[in-house]
Length: 200
Image 1 (cartoon, rainbow, N blue to C red):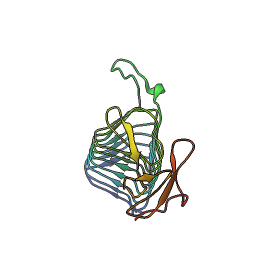
Image 2: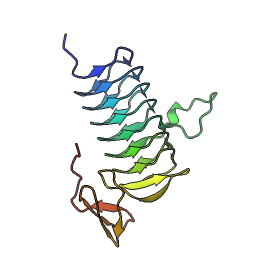
Image 3: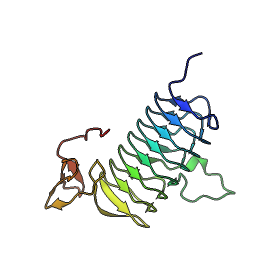
């Protein structure tokens, strides 16, 4: 019998078939449904449900009481805060079956979604975007955007390391890690160093 290279607490369930990467940990009272793919070094907290066919990248942290529904894709280094919420149907009714109407949600690399935030389905959360606690996201979010409120609106830009950026004109330099950014013609920002290095 081959020893598993990931950890599943005895109170949790992993349906077959599933693919789970090396070093991933799945903690108490969680359920991973069939045909999921979870990357390496992920931390899946207590009372988490990952529905069928979900894709989770490497080094993703899912805190307690989160349900990741069919149609969700989480890229590498995503953070899901405690009790944050995904959806996958826009107009649910108990008596109407809408499994064929699931709307996909894409959370790009490095994005963080704070505790009790809600991500309405059918939207994309950009790379290293930061969603404040309790926010309700109803549309696409640009890379590096700082969003909060209900509905969530943009209140600035965040460095990939998690510090709010202060722009002087068209450029900003992170006071913590030193990474530099510049505004683009598309009303977004980009790192002048190219793809951000992984922060360990």
